[in-house]
Image 1 (cartoon, helix red, strand yellow):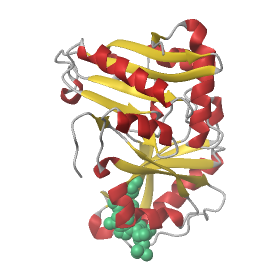
Image 2: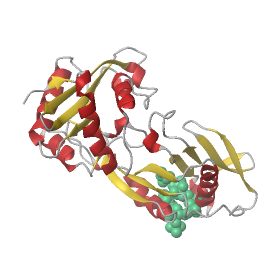
Image 3: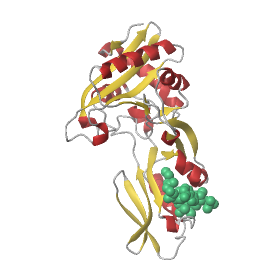
Image 4: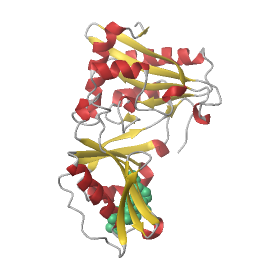
Length: 303
Ligand SMILES: CC(C)(COP(=O)(O)OP(=O)(O)OC[C@H]1O[C@@H](n2cnc3c(N)ncnc32)[C@H](O)[C@@H]1OP(=O)(O)O)[C@@H](O)C(=O)NCCC(=O)NCCS
């Protein structure tokens, strides 16, 4: 089993391997060759942390019938400009493998560990597989062969790292009606992640959501056309269960529909889901697409 650095001639085979994994997360999602080539040099989905990367490599095990496993490794700088959590750290940014070749995944993980060890990284973490595309960034349960390779190689995670990827159609969501609370008005403004829809009571924001209406990254990911992301949603504790959350979401969805979006996708942390957010979202007809765990490390985590 030969683990080697990815060369340009491997790219089409890596693309095939990745594009058998992505639709097991969100049906219809795939990468283009151009996007993958760019992603290996610069991660457009991480504008804050990617400039901190000082070294990156992709390792692979190729085979006659296609690529068997590949992992993308990053090493972050140790300067002041690097956020504390990543300063001097090393990361397996993603790993994918052919389900019939578990040894290939283990060989890639062993070489990855050696690559990180000789660089004396302060922390070693595995993020997952979702780093190729926006929205999801863990190891999904629908890649059991990857989960099994990580566990066999000694990586562990914790239940606090569990989350669900929800998604569905915008069609069944009713148009917004009048405000559920007297004097509530809607404000639309630019937010930190996307367009912010706020439920305002006078000058006070009682709740908000943020929406990203285009996930194609300037057409670099055409398979994601028509999808939007619900990036954040929150209603102040004292104002919950009065219909404000549903009213904000209905307004946001009406805006998305008029912009030509058809479907939505978003992450929900396991704790929020258990507290009632899952029930809230299912009322719009949105369901769990996949569950995933973000961030695995070789120190034992307990939950
Ligand atoms: C989820 C949330 C935005 C709903 O806002 P809201 O104004 O209470 O929503 P509505 O009044 O329209 O709907 C109420 C439903 O929200 C859900 N809900 C209520 N309290 C909740 C809580 N603490 N956490 C999560 N969901 C809750 C329930 O399904 C509830 O229905 P029920 O009253 O029949 O049980 C709000 O509860 C919240 O901010 N929760 C914390 C943050 C969060 O979970 N955000 C979503 C994660 S992506």
